[in-house]
Image 1 (cartoon, rainbow, N blue to C red):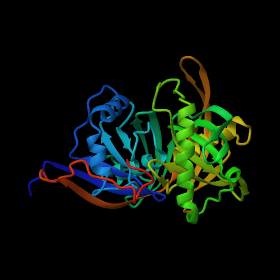
Image 2: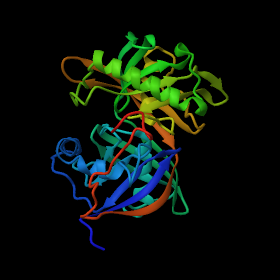
Image 3: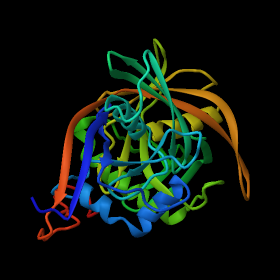
Length: 348
């Protein structure tokens, strides 16, 4: 078979969110750090993301993770997240998929009953503990990068919606956190289309009004996601609530979104509503769950300000769904795929 490109991928999902892992056929991009490699891909090598995520090989429901050798000697490997329209510095669900694939395929050695990894992401190093039994990864707990509140209780008049109240928080990317009840919105599968439409409209307005920068990473593209939040309830094991994170160009994260949940936990902690070590169960629109906990407080030292921050952990499960070899015929009229608005809120 004649191909101009052959890419080996292991399919996986973490609590419903698809996080495919590229394990062969792609050389590491140039760059002295994984963040620099991510920046190069975004600037010079975006054809890889488009080839895999666009139809006919993918769709707006897919994320891809490029595994690369770590640049930091403390880490065993690195990975770069590629989403339908972005390259977020960190992703909780994708970290769970990557760790599961690295261990279950033997790319990294598995130790039972627990394997500890350090992986390098564009957002920094993350420590990952994997509960393992019988050659399988039963559960992954990722200690996220430092997460913090950029601004609480912001308001904005959004065309077609009215005044919207939100928090701006960083959980591995910048999130606008919106109380679903403020919009009369219920986070249920039947409302998925409405949630996406509201989320994309609010995101456009927030991005036009706010351009937060990370104290250490600098400009990472501003606000990337809108997350709708349900009221917090007191469950048997602690506080719990549902969220729905809208991923552009128009889909809801099928998992509880580890980075959105981390941003939410940062806001709760800043308000005194969640303490150190206190468990928090974040639930998705599908009913899947991530367990979160604030492991410790820290700070981000950068200019122009220092930011108090937290290190939250995200605990969940992933499953391998298949092994794929994607090829590109040199005569294929769509060398970077295609997309139509019948399957997405807008083109990507």
